[in-house]
Length: 132
Length: 236
Image 1 (cartoon, rainbow over the protein chains, first blue to last red):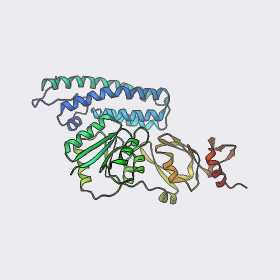
Image 2: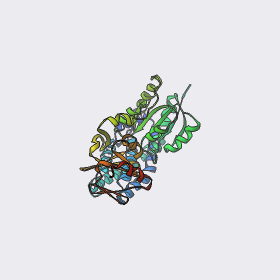
Image 3: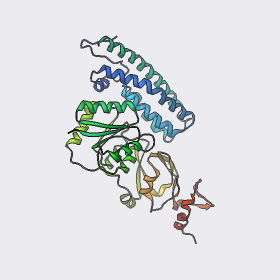
Image 4: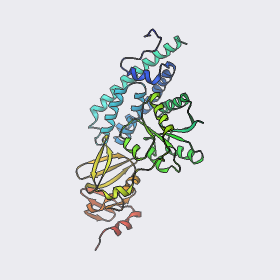
């Protein structure tokens, strides 16, 4: 468990820690709530992404990725947020077959992100318990 | 006295941040949070909020649809995760535009801006008059503003919350409604022939029964629109 001398929670290096520090302003309890909400909401939205892709519904796919993009941003995955934006743009005039490689990458990034946030959530819970 | 607001946002995390920031500022009182434009409009019929935090892309009607249907002029702060809507924000004369996720510092800048700005009502985008004089228009597609010559447009097709512009070379999909486009194009060479289609009548090759043929595409003609179509064509 990482702790700085000022007892401030230090976010995982794969996240945009500087942005998260500014967003949460040291409120690790609120950060825990947001990360919990992310883990609660992402699976449902992601199922919609998968369904849209399987059904070749490019407009639905774009909308669903748009929603997930926002969620990724709020937990510090600003790079993934940009990737989602590019994917959204491509949905306008590409078929699912055209986007197969991008979709595979997006899926991998989402899995990775979810794993990082699960760990980060656990760290936050422990940190907040230890600093009550 | 606090400024009253409503939050129109379908993503709970984003709405929660807004509510938290409003409470933290001590300047804004949140009167309600709505997941879609319709519920927000229903509330606003009875309770006028000073300020609306308005998402753009939501299920059903968009944030811009809500602005088109407002019956009074509150302050508006648009919230979205795309920068391409900045153009529309400008056209609607909104007070500020916040790109999600935004920090408390950025939120406060927006609030301070509306508290110091003179009241200027949000206006719908310039509709038919300027567009009628120009032989082109701009649409937001592919994360940029795309210029289309009206004469290149074969037809427009409604795709729920989007409109597809079909030209001979390429199709473009923009986040809008056919109704919006109708206001910008109808009366020139464009005619609504079906609830889901507007065609450039100069591109019609032939009509067989209730189907229009133009450059490889077949467009249905709705019963309600047939009479007007016949009236607009120069039939000898």
